[in-house]
Amino acid sequence: MNAPSTRSAESDDVAAAGHRELLELLEGYASLSRDYADAREPRLALLAMWAADVHVLQLLLLESGLDRAPDPSAQLAGVGNAVNRSLSGISPEGVTPRQLLERSREAMVATFDPSVHALLVNRFQSLSHLDAVEGLEVDSPDSAIERRLDGRTCEQLVADLEATADECVAVAGAMVVADDLKGSLRQMHHADLATFEAFLLRTAMESGDQTLASVDLSWDLAARAFAEHSTQPAGDVDFAAMVVAWREQLVVFGGWAQAARMRASFLPVRVP
Image (tube, rainbow, N blue to C red; front, side, top):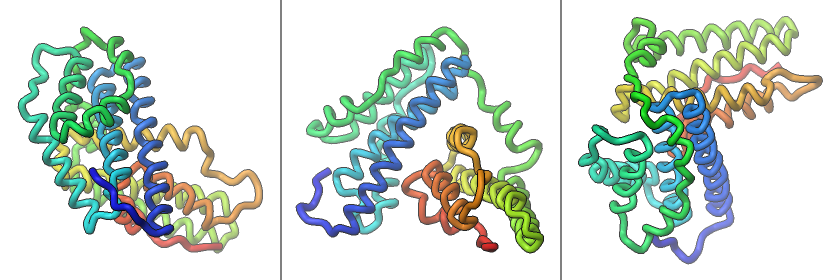
C-alpha cells in the first residue's frame, strides 16, 4: 500500500471524488446496519456492517494509490480474493452476529502486512448496535430472494427490468413532446431505477452473490436517499441536469469500482 510520490491534478481530483464516494458508502452502510438492527433483522444488520468494513478497506487502498494502478478493478478483485481466502475458515455456527463480524474483521486484517493492521482497525466503526440482535436467529435469505425474483430467474428479471426501462424512456419522450416536464422526469426516474436494479443483479450474478444480498443493500441505500431528496422539480429546472444528478447518486450506490460500467448502462435522455 505504498503511494507514488507524484501525481497529476486530474488524478488528484479523481482520487478526491472516489474518497468522498467511498466515505459516503461506508457511513451509509453503517447507518443501514443500525437501522436493520433496530428492525430486528440480524442477517441484514450483519451484512450491511460487513459492507461498511469492506469500504474501510477500499478507502485505505484508494489512499494508498489504487486509482493509479494499471487496472484498479483487477487489483481490487485480487485483494477481494485474498480476503475471501482468509475468511474461508470462519464458521458462523455457535456465534452471535457481533462475534462473527469480529472474527471476520480479524481475518481481513490478517490478510495484510502488519504495517497496515492499525490503519484498518482504527477505522472500523462500533459494533455495539449488533448487541440488540444477540439471541435472534439469523434468518434465511430465501424469502428475500423469492420476493425480489417473484418466480423468475435472475436472468428473466434482468430482461423484464430492461424492458421496463425501455418503455419508461419511450413514455418520457412522448411526455416531452406534450410539454409534460414533471411526467417525463417521473418516467425517466422509473427507467433509471429499473436500469439500476438490473445492473445490481448482473453484478451479483457475476460475483457469485447467490443470495442477492448486495442487491438488497444497495437498493435499500438508494431508497433511503431518494426518500430524503425529491426527484420532482419544485419550479423551473434543468431537465438533463436533474437526471444526471440522480444518476450520479445511483452510480455511487452501485460501487466505486463499477462506476464507469453503471454510467454506460443508463439509456439516453431526450432533453426537452
